[in-house]
Structures are given as structure tokens and as C-alpha cells.
Image (cartoon, rainbow, N blue to C red; front, side):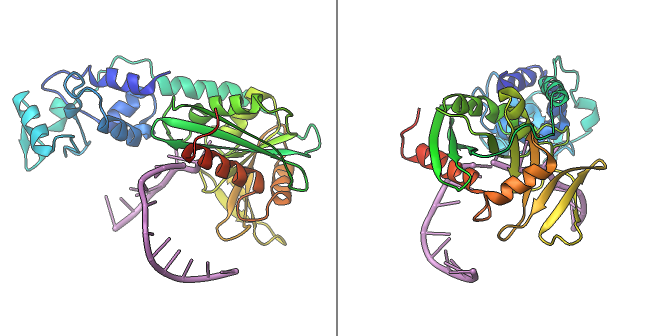
Length: 312
DNA sequence: GCGACAG
DNA sequence: ATCTTGTCGC
């Protein structure tokens, strides 16, 4: 799915003499929370003439940015009959366009997430021994996924990278649609599959219970653990007798743990085929620094591959 | 100024 | 995530 294409098609629907907002476009894409991405995406509108992004403004009537400056945006809108005073649109509600023809692609992606969620198993199937750390790095339109497999005594067993063009933007809670295709490929090219994957992102610690680690786990039918550097959702509760560890609750259920390794905590959640407890203990076993070694080394491999060529 | 949804 | 110099700290 080409979300950028979908967005530009929506913008092309706005008739002269009308405007819409970043939030309205996000809603038409299927999720009002994607409004920040809408703004960023319109900033690089490839066809400012045919795609009338000058008709996209803030909900409060302020105009927002424009490639050729605010004067040009004002002039274009006035020529189309929009009244602007003091840099703001007068009577927004009279000119606001909301009647978009759309199949709400982000809503469809949420449905995909719900289906994957039904397949999640949060119990230990096998003992975790070797662990593959996974990360993806980006530059311009290029992405590099890396996997580094470590033994239980932290020896490197295998490294692998895979490059591709970036196919989906970063929108919070939809990270898996950006990163899982390339991760799937790099894992499939490993000579020997590790007993579990550690993924840079969340597992069930996610508003819909299916973060990147869970998504990848179901696709590959492998045990996965999510490790994030910032909290996506939920709240922390300290655990008696366990300083440096907190339970993370979301909608009443424990969905992961915060763990203070070095400095700021990391946020751990099971992805698939792993229990809550095993997710925590496995991360602890593989931690020398703040970030567990498999993920840290995968991150370094992905970044250096992006910068100094190699990979493929 | 407040709220602030991973990478 | 990425853009980026020197600086602070273990």
C-alpha cells in the first residue's frame, strides 16, 4: 500500500474555494493521530501544481507552511475565493472540505493488526538459547535491516544485512508496516535460525496489543521479544523487593516491564511464543550495557552498513 | 501552555 | 529514525 499516493489522491479531491486540515486528511486516511505525518508528507509534495496542498491548513484557521512561503499560499487561496485576515482564514466552517472519497487505508491496517493479535501465543514453547537481535537503519529513501545472532554466552554466531527502498512511512503504532517486510527477509537469509528474536520496538506493549515484535513473531512463527527505549503506552507500577524493575499496565493488564539497566529504563514486552517472565529474564541475561547486546550490535551493523556500503 | 503513541 | 561538535562522565 502506497500511503503517500493515497494522501495525494485525497488532497487532489479538495475543490477550489475550499480548504481542509491536516487532521481531516488523517481522519480520511483512517486515523486522526496520523496528522503529524500528513504535515511532513505534504512538505515534500512532488507536484505542488496538480496536487493543491495550499488548500491544507491548520484547524484553527492558521495557514501552516508552504514551499514558496506564506505569501504565495495566501495569494493562491484568495484567488480561489478564500477570505484571509491577519494570516487566518475567516469562517473556517463555511469553507472546510471534509467530504472525501476514501477507503481508509490505516483502518485496514488496524484490521490486519487485530487479525495478527488473535494468533498471538504468550507462553514459552521452547527454551531460549541463541538470540538474534534485529534493527533497521534509514538514510534518504534507503533502509537496511540487520540481524546479529549471539550465543547464550554473548559470542557472535552470525551477522546478516538486507537493503531495500523505504516502502512505508513511520507512523506511531504502525511501525510494523514499515519494518517487518525487510526484517522478514533478513531473518529468512540466516544460515541458522536463533531460538528467539529480540526486536527494537514493542511486542504486546501496544495500543492494539500487536507491536513490531509481535507482528514479526507471527509472520515468522518465531519466539520474539520487544525492547523499546521509550514508553509507547501504559503506566508503571513498582514491584516490591525488585528495585529497578516496574510492571507496565495497559487497560488493566500487565503487558511488559520497565527495566533500569544503565541510566534511563528500557521497556520490555513479549512479542510471540514467549511469556512475560521469560521476556524479562532473557533481556537481563543478554544485557551488558543499557540496550541488550543482540539489539545493540544489530543497530551498529545496520548503521555502519548504511554508511559504508556493503550488504544487499 | 498543555498534551506529547515505539522507530 | 535522522540532522550533528564538542563536551560530560564512568
